Length: 260
Image (cartoon, rainbow, N blue to C red):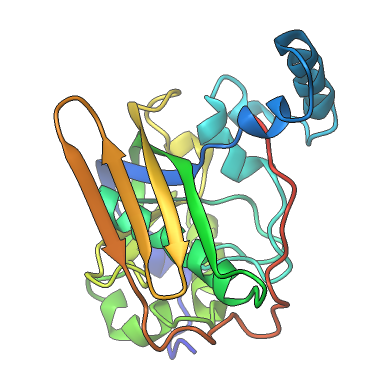
């Protein structure tokens, strides 16, 4: 638990305007997931429209954003929330300043799903979209004074209560982003939690790449081929196979979300 109770004034007085570019990794299943259910592209289009009508309406700040950017703000959180989003808090877009860190963050949770699924030996390679976005906002950096003294609370592997409370205070301070140390990247790269869609400097991703992610019980592997070069990333988390947020049930397979 965090030993300091931060006030909106303290958070605001330690914030600074930032302009940065960050990477986010998501499963590239937005078209494949519905195409497998129909016999033609026309039927797929009709199914996409039907699914869209069943989703939460896009509030004003989200309208006009690319679906990769608005999706994190559109849906309710998991019952226990996430690192900087409590069970009843608005959406948060998580990203990282390096591709490696973004891949480590997503890869960890794919690996956790495998580890909590006794009947699965591995997850075969599947395409992932890794895209870059622009942020221009007021932000605080938890790695800097006066916040870094609470590093143990910010980087706890399973107890998110301090981070969620701090994020709520940050919103009250009208600060729109939190920079912090990645817990899942073994090299502890820089992550950013974007608390408001108004912090996004561009309405479209700056660029997007397709990577393949395969998962075993020992490691996760990322691989990308293009005409210029081949890139590979590999991660493992020894000793983390039994850590879950407190009171959280075992992860369940959630229906694929299509285009936001």
